[in-house]
Structure formats: structure tokens, C-alpha cells
Length: 104
Image (cartoon, rainbow, N blue to C red; front, side, top):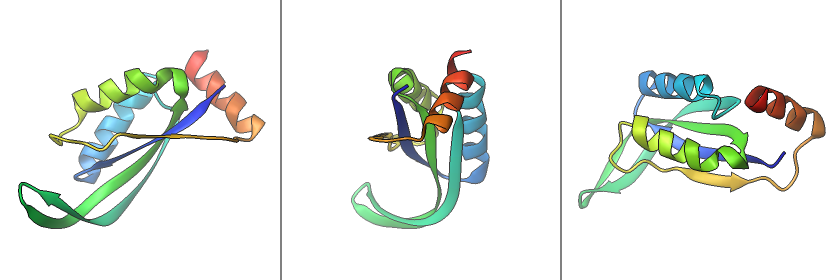
């Protein structure tokens, strides 16, 4: 089991919950940790500020491409961040649980 985390952001809690629930139902992720935060970023030539919901999505490397495409399909942002974080180590118990959820 080769686990990865995928980081993305959402404009609000409603879209975050809706999309995360869909990803869970499709068995593309086993879990998501979400937190609201302040964001500052360039958009269309000016600096914007606002609140976003950041999410760490937990999955297996074999699900990466399908997960990335599903996020693009479901996401309200024109250009969402979809960053894969490869994990060097993960405790065996959690890894086994992930495998059961995703592949059984």
C-alpha cells in the first residue's frame, strides 16, 4: 500500500463537504481533514483576499489520476490546486485500514 495525501482548497464549507462526500462515495479517498483559513493570492492581475477551506485527502497512489480528474470535474474553481504529497512512511495499522476501505 503506497499512501499519498492530496491537498486542495475550496471556496466554502458547502462545496468542500459536497465534493469530499462524493470522493468518499466513489472510494477515491478514505478520509479528509478540512480546516477554514485565510487566503491571499493573485487572480486576474490583482491580489485577492478571502476565506477558503483547505483539505488534505488521504488515498493510495493507484487512485491518484482518477482522484485528480474527479476533483477537476467537481471543483467550482477555474484553476484548483491539486497537489500530491508522497508519504515516505505510514504506520502499518493505518495503511491496512486504508487498503480495506479502498479495495474491499
